[in-house]
Image 1 (tube, protein in one colour):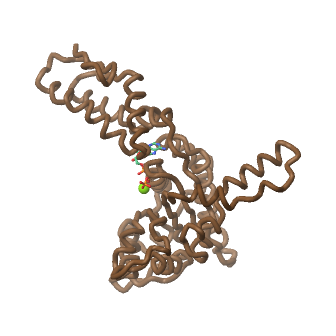
Image 2 (cartoon, rainbow, N blue to C red):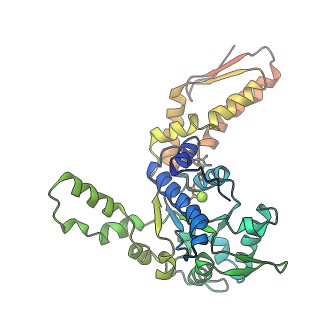
Image 3 (cartoon, rainbow, N blue to C red):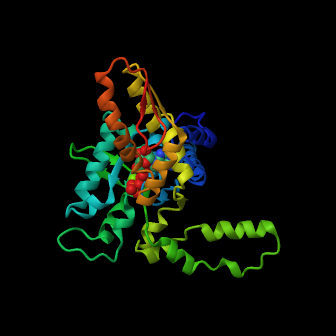
Length: 330
Ligand SMILES: Nc1ncnc2c1ncn2[C@@H]1O[C@H](COP(=O)(O)OP(=O)(O)OP(=O)(O)O)[C@@H](O)[C@H]1O
Ligand SMILES: [Mg+2]
């Protein structure tokens, strides 16, 4: 069970160490998770039915959705599994797939069903379940949505060993890029006609206008019953060049600190100048895959250096000043 001293702000503080930017999303998720575990702890005793606040994460590829969920689960210490909606749509045996996901959750809890029932299930690529995609042989997106909403709501599911796992208290987080949703939103949002006489009103209007409405998701292709079970929506921003630079250098386990550690093990001090990170960010920005391409570009830069260094024990320092200049060894 979740540590009772955990507060939304402490969740955000922890996430900040690993996830750059995405302040709104972090707060939304932190509050939803906090509220979820509070409800489980208190309402169960009060005998009031729990209204679950499953979460939908919307944002372009490589902006930190999966990272945020993984980091969150580490912090919370509750069993956590990730599944891809696309693989659910590719099988004809959706219910078996879903059962397998819950089995993995039970395994994560060391077979403790009670613990697994308080876990988190992250279902990625939920946007690929668009109802309009008519598919043959495999299960259509729409029927996968139907299968999922049953367990999201809360249902007993029989595992292969005959045990039942109740999904009522399991928190479901769905994620997807939802390409094209911006366009839908820009066409359907009409809060603007309400008169906005002062700055505060304008702020509220801006907030409402940036909110994803269930009808937007419906237009996109998710069935209403499904969107209805995802009342909390967190939006991930596209990453700017500046954020890409920060991602390479700031997180506890950043690419830079990882490679500095590798070189330290060879007794070499690696220095990469800020210009290099800007250059890498520029290239990655062009690739439009969020932060996903950063590691590859960085590794390409560092591979020739890592090839040379072990052969020359006299090297103590390596400085990379630019992507387009040979590193200096000393
Ligand atoms: N905001 C961020 N802060 C720190 N690192 C990030 C951030 N966004 C992305 N990254 C880095 O990029 C990698 C890919 O991000 P992640 O897997 O979270 O993307 P995603 O949003 O789930 O994308 P997709 O929709 O393609 O699944 C992460 O492992 C992490 O190293
Ligand atoms: Mg992902």
